[in-house]
Length: 248
Image (tube, rainbow, N blue to C red; front, side, top):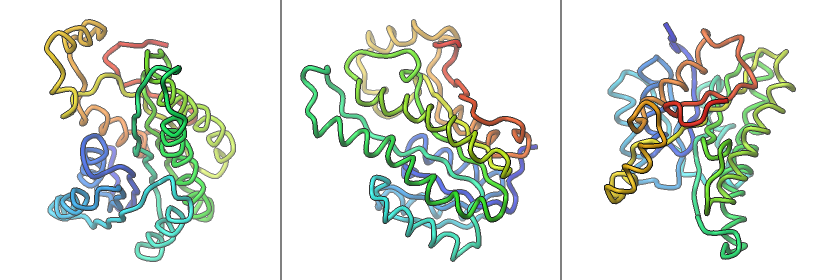
């Protein structure tokens, strides 16, 4: 089930955390995986892990906000491996502050990476997917794009934009056998959340009906499903992986 044998995947923001978990999960399912991140040192540590799973790995130190670099990367993957079957847009940044205190450059930086970067990656891989009449595009959004949160106007605007972009592209390419979906994770246990004071963690857990933080593997398993043949009749959908924190 959910076998990706013979597939080629590109995962952005894959040097650590959720992106790394996604890359390894897709490799475990049988895909060869191209990885991109701005952290070249950590990225270089992921490729050997993919190869130990018996799959091929390629690494690119690319900032997804650079449209030309993104196109060059996509073309290089196709030149090396012949195709791109799966795109996972995971790369993202935060620069939190209240709206009245938020610097214009922080607004611009978050939108360029989190929304423009998704668009650039989609635009770069779509011609290849259209030619082969097959593709799976999975965009990582966030629960706060649906529920809102104080001090994250730039991040929320970018992630809400990802949901709108997902639905628009899904409608455009559905007849080409290309599905486009989004995943909206809730509170996920990361190195950052581990450093939070206990009282803050307890407050966060109180908002989650299942009573625990999510894991990067919870998100990665959702990506694996949406990348598989089992999800072929699902497109334009937002998969909430949030422990019931937001229900819609």
